[in-house]
Image (cartoon, rainbow, N blue to C red; front, side, top):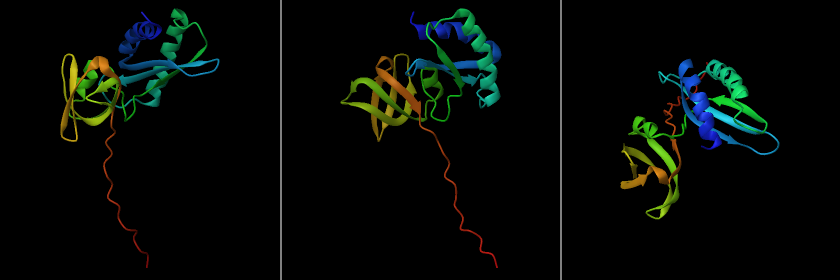
Length: 164
């Protein structure tokens, strides 16, 4: 079990007890101090607030100090997944079927490694992605990184009102 898997195993029960689901964990950064990034979401799928992040951070900080899974100095950062939420688990792909995503693969799939299209279907061992009318079957083990493409509603711009 690598360090990230160990961290997930340590923190996930506490996050669940607090009403959060674990989205993603990463450990990186340069210099003398790494950053442990923990992305959370509310179990009821409502928006994560700053207060949620502070609450989770306090609990996880104590827990990680006790368990001590990282041997070097690090900073803990707890955040929401944001509008361009990463898709990590199979359940993420199932949940966001029908949405536009972008992804990169480890190896070329039909001569390409970067895709942006509609997540048509999430199956047991692969996803079906439609890109500009063409369908691709991409195995989960080939997905290096996948994220939602944020949806922003276009605002109607009205001309300024002239004062008399």
